[in-house]
Length: 291
Ligand SMILES: NC(=O)c1ccc[n+]([C@@H]2O[C@H](COP(=O)([O-])OP(=O)(O)OC[C@H]3O[C@@H](n4cnc5c(N)ncnc54)[C@H](O)[C@@H]3O)[C@@H](O)[C@H]2O)c1
Image (spheres, rainbow, N blue to C red):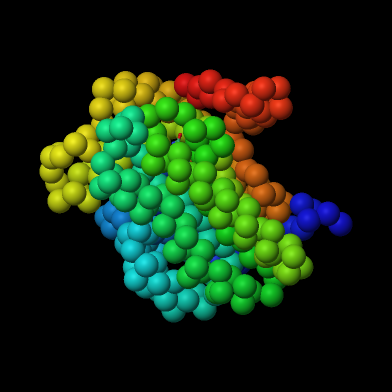
């Protein structure tokens, strides 16, 4: 049996999903509970995550909502403690919370680097650090999935911190998966690389960035002209994107079948093929335009 054939049985298992108040995280929670899992849904937005968990409970599912800022280690530890107190086990972690701002590198402040990497890179690092030992207690196998992006494979212009974080989490999950394999562990890691998905990530990111700064729009950290142009182009692009509930089902399928790479829009991989071909041909960087 190849590693990819190793299956995970979701029924009666427990998943912790970050960034689960809406969008892709809520899509995962819906798909996982439909497959008989219990979900611990967590988000920085306490009211929205509780409302989403309540929606699942009213449909007869086992779901709780907990507020966590994934960029803070003590809050991620408190989340793990709460999940263990409630269920006594955690089988699956989805490091999905994320945020993005768009600006050329020259205009990205150190503050915005720290904020973006805090959520998008340190969040998954803390999640993996805290939850891996718990998931490994499960003898039937378990899974850590992290949401990257096609931006993690092809770094486009005007999204530097996001690209760096999303590339970093691919390396994090690939390292973990290789370590599981070397240890002949029944546990698995994977990375979700979504293309355009119809969520509110743009608006949410602007709001959380302001909140992280104590509300001000002050400083040189505002999205610049190139960033605003890309942001608005991305807004239109995402509005026509895939339904996040479909992404949830794709992730569940990937976990159940022990896949490492989970794509929503495999055709976008042509950008990666282009890059590999140019690396081989003359070592040049491709255009890498996503939108
Ligand atoms: N929408 C897309 O097209 C797309 C494409 C590629 C990758 N992604 C990734 O998918 C993931 C989910 O995004 P989405 O599109 O569903 O957007 P979303 O805004 O609906 O979901 C992200 C969630 O993360 C939460 N969050 C933000 N900062 C947080 C923090 N510090 N701690 C805890 N929670 C926090 C937000 O409140 C939000 O509910 C993100 O990692 C994003 O980068 C999205």
